[in-house]
Length: 281
Ligand code: DHB
Ligand code: FE
Image: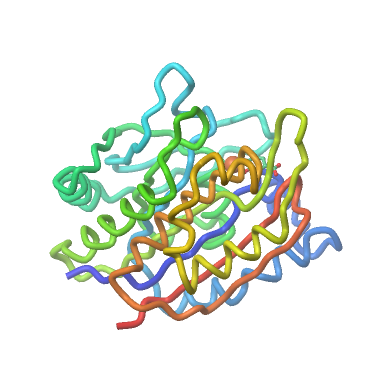
């Protein structure tokens, strides 16, 4: 049976992708951010996951406001990236695992999570920046992927509790897959940031640090937050934290051991967070 080996969460700011493309990891502005990643990459090199389920939000590349699924999962043999206008070059395609995708779809729909199923799906910076941070932009790629996109763009958004519960069902679905695969769940986005309106540039360090601690040690405490609470306390794009909660819900079938945690501001307009939790059981 497949084994859920752990969960990782990281911010997905497009400027990180540009910094990687321009080799700026040791630059004074970027170094404190990139310095969080070697322990995570060492863990990945040791554990060698076969498949990554990547929980992210599409920002307008694959879905636009005219058609906005709450939950959408990839079931393709590969996932391409394309120009979103950030100046990022399109990366080589990411190989999928359609058998794993269809197993997850069967199990999640049976658990009352009605997903849009995408046999073609472009993946944006919410997906590609974390992939470059974790596995670098190396071809052939080290993992197969299943992208799971959640609407954080057009209200109403799914609540923190609903997303955590989706994660719980996802964790069970992963571990009922009848092949000996090592699977990692990656949550992307957050932490606090607001890119638009009067509060553009808003970052809430205290709230971010509380979220980082609670998501490891007492995730239940985060589940009564509403989307309104998240927008108020973390900014309108800080609601991307629901993607981290899917990752944490998936790990609820195991105990967790914290391997890495990092918080750094500012990275572009965002409080940048990083977390690696290993499954223990
Ligand atoms: C930024 C952060 C995001 O999450 C995003 O999707 C786009 C931009 C930023 O901080 O610049
Ligand atoms: Fe984003």
